[in-house]
Amino acid sequence: MLFSFNSKAEEKNIKYYSDDKGILSLMYHRFDENKYPSTNIQMDIFKKQIKIIKNLKYTFYDPKNLEENFYTPKIEKKILITIDDAFSSFYEIAWPYLKKEKIPFILFVSTESVGKNGYMTWNQIKELEKESAVYIGNHSHSHSYLVDLKNKEFIQDIDTSSSLFKENLGYNPIFFLTLLENIVHL
Image (cartoon, rainbow, N blue to C red; front, side, top):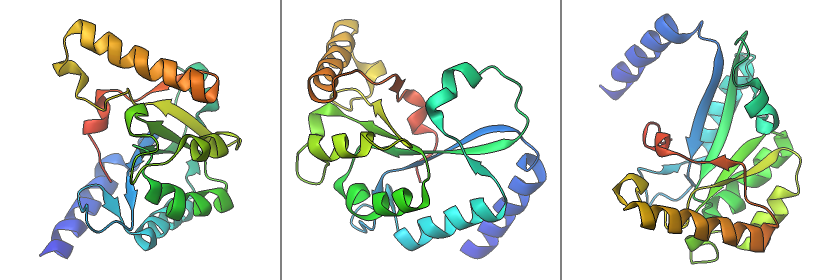
């Protein structure tokens, strides 16, 4: 039954979306953490997905020029990889693979979690951000659903994350994970 459903979904995707141009963003969270099935992906499945992307001859989008290219005509489909929450399983399992394959991505970090059990440390984040294909994004401080916060709480949350980024990385990231994160979780 599941295979049948997936086959039909793939058939519909090919039929309706295969000619779409622009940037397709794929968001990932945890790697090989079976305890968290809704946000986990097995590394062998992740590698298969990357292989499919390469076999289809799509290129991975390097977000360094995202702002200047945002309004230019879309002439091809490109894939943007994003990693949400800076879980340590990403650093330990997926990062070595992405580095070896030279695949660009954005790592969105909630500053309150940094260094806690199961999350990356500031030193690990600094190590990644030195790489030319790695970009750090701000995912707020508390990882709260920001639209539920009062204006003052919202501003305080963002100011706290911005201060911690400046203190630990020397800058506030230009990428900010918005409410769109709730659309696709892989």
